Amino acid sequence: NNRAATWTEKIAVVQPTLPLIAPTIAHDILETIQESVIKQQQIDVVYRAAHNATPKKMTLHPLALVQRGLVTYVVARVNSYADNRLFALHRVEEVVLTKRPANIPPDFNLELYIASGALHFGNGEQICLILRVNDWLKKILEETPLSTNQKITLKKGVILVEATILNTPQLEWWLLSQADGLEVLEPIELRKKIAERLLGAARQYQ
Image (cartoon, rainbow, N blue to C red; front, side):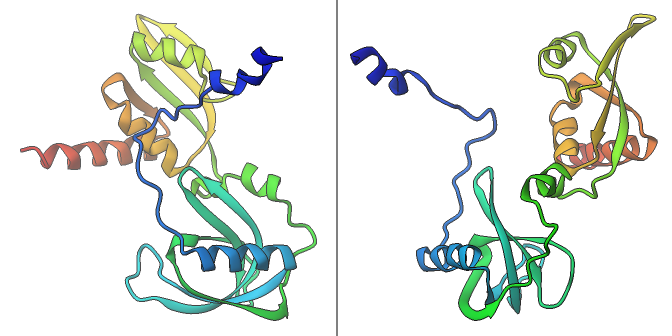
């Protein structure tokens, strides 16, 4: 009926992050990499890493494609190495699809790979995070917990949040973004790291 037909016009998804513009991927590069994943064939690429201004030639064994926010990545193995890595498609400057079959590990599972935290660019380490938070952040975390085992307690007028969570750069970014509403108590190493980042940021305004 007409009401059902207009249903999609009444639903929207809005990201709560700063709306950056997606990087540009050359159409021919995107198509070639997609084809390599489907056909399970090696690709020879020229890739410019974010931390290195000099592009490098390498052979990739593509395993899967993943969209993380605005950036598309190909999960692949490099040359004869046995570890799975991420390559942003917009940093691929040249690509050639070969006839050589890709080395696809039989136990590779994309869902498990994502669950390992690889897309958060951390080391997959689980930590016990303990925070002191203000009342406003307490309400936010009650509605949207950090983890399934999150605990919120009140001790001597102090609100404490405890959660087991992956130690990732994304966690650090979140802690920094909420810095005026929380204090990292544990782990000590993370507390020191956040404190150093905040002190460094404060110096920019002196």
